[in-house]
Amino acid sequence: MRVRTFFSSRSHIVGLVLLVILIPLTLLEVNRQQHFKGNAACSPALTILATGGTDSTSTSISTSTSVSNTIQHYEYVFPDGRMYVYDMDNGHRLVKSINLPTRAGVRGVVVGLATHMLYVSYGSDGGGNGNGSLLKYDLVADKVVWTKNYPHGIDSMAITPNGKTIYMPDGELTHNGTWYVVDTNTGNDIGCIDAGTGPHNTIVSLNGTHVYMGGRNYDYLEVADTSTNRVIKKIGPLLSGVRPFTINGKETLAYTTATGFLGFQVSDIYTGRVLYTVPIHGFTWNPATSPSAPSHGISLSPDEKELYVIDSPNSYAHVFDVSGVPASAPKQVADIKLVGLMAGDEFPCAYDCLRDGWVQHSRDGRFVYVGDSGDVIDTVTRKTVITLSTLHNTRKMLEIDWQNGVPIFSTSRSGLGYVTSSGSNTASPTSHSTISTSSTNIVIPTLCHAHQTQSVNR
Image 1 (cartoon, rainbow, N blue to C red):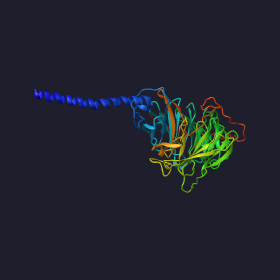
Image 2: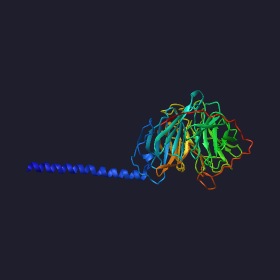
Image 3: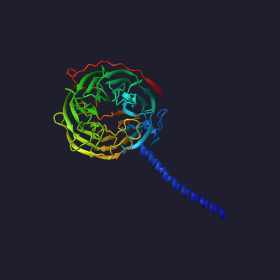
Image 4: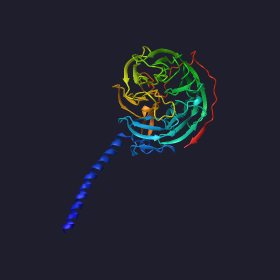
């Protein structure tokens, strides 16, 4: 009897111990599930384990497959060979990371919302460095659709709002001025535009009617009509080539940076003339030890009241009040010391690794993301709220917003203005710009020939 009592008592003790351990764990799991249902990425594309194609693997924080009608905002960051996704609404927590076959060096990234497709240009930017490629990625299915290898260079491209056409620059190191017109369904070149030499950065207007082409070695920002793919406007002459640039929503103003200049210029798109040349006051730089474009990053706030400009030699972001432009010149109102130093090279990095910098506003204007420093700046306090190590090692990033399991909005790499009518901060597909086609700056170029491509389906 004593033996039975002993074992019976011991069983009760073990049972109590197990209950003490299991009950808190169960409650913790319930709380975790509730937290993700309320706050995490609720679309399958952002919460299930992604396949990423045959060359890709991924990690994911949540395994929930529920779908939410709440709009959720994510910043996508693209160092070479990888994609990272951060939850903007929850302290920029890492949601997932995915390997991509882009280790040859990412040059640009765009999103086609109508088809839920992401496109990444990677490889060489022409000249003696060789040719480049394009990757198509299904955001909802989380897998690589195909990759294309081109017999020409690639660079920072732009996509039309309907997601059907990409304008792909031949690369800043090429001696021509070719932007290829790419069919996003197949990845094939279907045409091209001759514009400024050293094809580098590209923007398509919010309404999709114009493509803006910045040649690194050409002193004019050129504009083409997307219905004809012909150049209709030259803006300039500018200081020294066209480096990172942006435009406002109505397509009346262009903000451009230049090689060898710490600052930016403001131009009237309608007349094609430079209005203001704006240096950064209170700061100096040494061209011998700095990137060729010290202000390699410029972003207009969505409401078009402020402009952020990079100062990579000094590791600063400078803020300008542009609410009075064009009637009055931009005013330098703040100088933000970056936490992440913009020195040295990105790592890992295959090519063009110097930390030149980049800036991009979130669509709601809450944050500014600083490429090559990793800083995420709160635009109200003008202070860094977090640094992302992946963003310290790339300047290719954009925002994608999700609702009901699908992407519903994306910024471009460039921080554009979104005011398309008086008092409006919403892009409209029917809004019209004021670009004149009767200016003496009109250019009718010689049409170029499209090249064949090699496809690799995934």
